[in-house]
Length: 249
Image 1 (cartoon, rainbow, N blue to C red):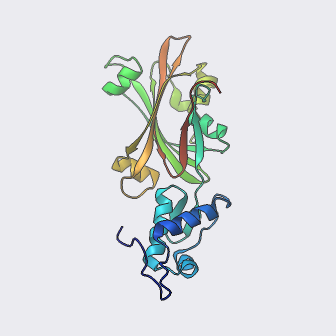
Image 2: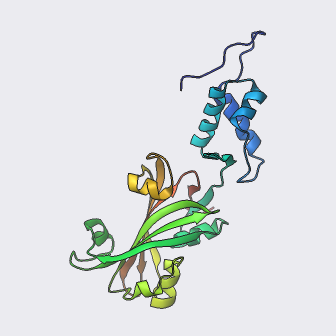
Image 3: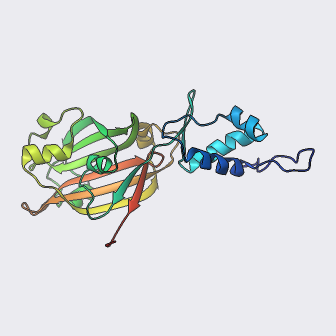
């Protein structure tokens, strides 16, 4: 960033840097509702007496802090980040986690296919290389915006006929419980920040290859004594916040 500060005014007082403008705007939007329109570049120029470049840099700074979401042609809006709490009581499904966070998620099945598992999937689901898995690809939204994209892998022999039960907006967890009598319980969960692959970025609707949450959950059914579901998902950092809680209060 080259425009660190504005030149001194005639009074000798230095006008705010883009970071100072961003800090002040962050305090202002703390009392605003998610989705509300934030001051434009032009309004920041008028309000703070800075250049258009500094105003733009301030909004970009807030975007990096995941406080706002900029929509080309529409403006800058207060971001709504759903807070998913990762603790021992977290539901064994993404939709359950979002509902627990107080938001109503929607998901769309993009496709299903039955195939031999990759080595990673075979190991997670305790499968032989020649066994089959059903892979379901989905995209999820909150507030009408794409928030996550991912795949769910299930042993084909355990979920025979799964595709016949999957509506376009089906909850896979609900289908496993209601139609297959399974009781998936979390066996393993891993979350990390990583650079999204290009094909994932396109599905998430983000430019370039930004950082995103990579979430992997493996669920097992105790009555069967085996893993029955592997979920691998990418979640947008500007729409989802993950909080880890371990131990007792």
